[in-house]
Amino acid sequence: STRVGVLALQGDVREHAALLAGLGADVVLVRRPQELAAVDGLVIPGGESSVIDKLSRIFGMREPIRAAITAGLPVYGTCAGLILLADTVLDGIDGQQSFGGMDIAVRRNAFGRQTESFETEIAVPVLGDPPVHATFIRAPIVERVGADVDVLASLADGTIVAVQQGALLGTSFHPEVDGETRFHARFLETVRGRVAG
Ligand code: GLN
Image (cartoon, rainbow, N blue to C red; front, side, top):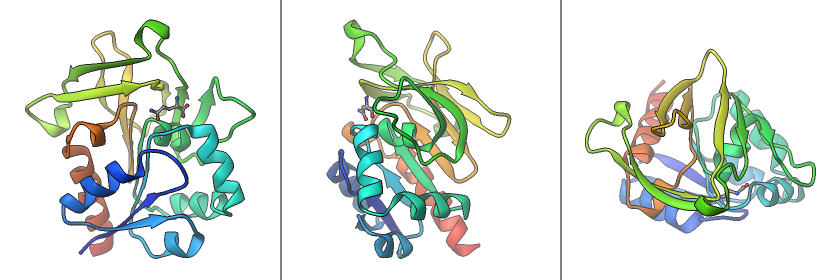
């Protein structure tokens, strides 16, 4: 079966692992370079991007993850994970850095106090019907996308909240907390396609 990792430094690791296992994937919790080397795809969970950034250096994971992304490893990031995939992070704290790979700029905690967390239905044309029930928790938004980035979903006001660039997929929201499996299924298709090569 398909061997995929969930970066397990901080964040909602269990929710992703359970969802991926439910889709038939062989799930590995990734904390060390040798674990990363053994997977064909990686999920970066939601959590706190600045903490995941710090821990990735402490665990010696930053450069291996960057190299894997450059080499074409399929990666799906939700929320903090999306921030970590962005080439440019706006409103970062403590000089936080991202792994990068997606030609996008994201703004952390982009929804104001009133709307720090909210749920809404969004149409995601590549996933078809029904629309996605999306949960946003201190979520980032995508403020700029490069020419090679596909916008998969936007809010009614045009705010971009789901993007794909080649083997990299990112959502501002958390499908893993809503039992929404279609983004992970799409990610697994990318992983299988690359393994079959
Ligand atoms: N605000 C968090 C960050 O900056 C992301 C929140 C989340 O992942 N739900 O990393």
